[in-house]
Image (cartoon, rainbow, N blue to C red; front, side, top):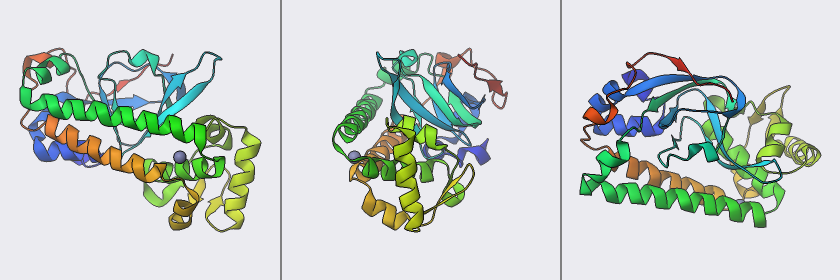
Amino acid sequence: MDLFATQNTYLALIAGENSKFITDNVELVEFARQRNAHTPPGLYFPLTCVLSLEKPLSDGSTVMMRLIGADGIANFIDRDFDLNPVTVLKAGVAARLRNDGLEHAMAKDPGRVQPMLDLYRCRTAQYALNTCCFARHPLTQRISRLLLRAGISFGRGNDITLTQEEIARLVATRRETVTDILNRFAREGVIELHRSVIRILRRDILRTHSCDCFTEEMKLEKNCAQSIASMFRGFEYGASADKRQRPNESITAGAA
Ligand SMILES: [Zn+2]
């Protein structure tokens, strides 16, 4: 358990504050690569999978709200997580913390209310940032930002196993536009394009191509992580999660 706690930035922070909490309350969930994965409620800490939290639009398309890898957390604490389908971009394992009674248990302790409100505020700011980015910034900047974030989320070596169709969907444009921009980046030596892998060679140049939203997003992510660490400091989950599965018992999240 301790080993996988170090695989996710957020989980590592909670483990640092309260290692027994993780041993007692976290279970492993396996995700297959799929659109609209219906996930039981809980806080998800991706260990080897990469998820995209999305918002369905009335025309049947979806828009990406956040990319979540080993550097992130998918918090379905608001209970209406069905409104925000999850796409599994890379199959793998996530650690799941059930949230049955979590909010109630948090709210009973006034010291935890403020960091929980801070977390909501940061998340809301992230979604607003994304909306503004989609509305105002050119595609070259948005694709650079996505590649930078994906480079972190996919981990090790900055190899991103996203297809050009997927990138087009995530930034809401046509595949041909993505192909043009990626080919230009490849000619400039910023990335290498392989059959099913995009390898980032020059993050520094990608940063200059990206809008400032990447820096803002990472600042907000850091604030979220600090809030989560404060929320779980010395936290006793106790009876609020009495129906939890046994730790280490692997379950598979069902497809839609
Ligand atoms: Zn932007």
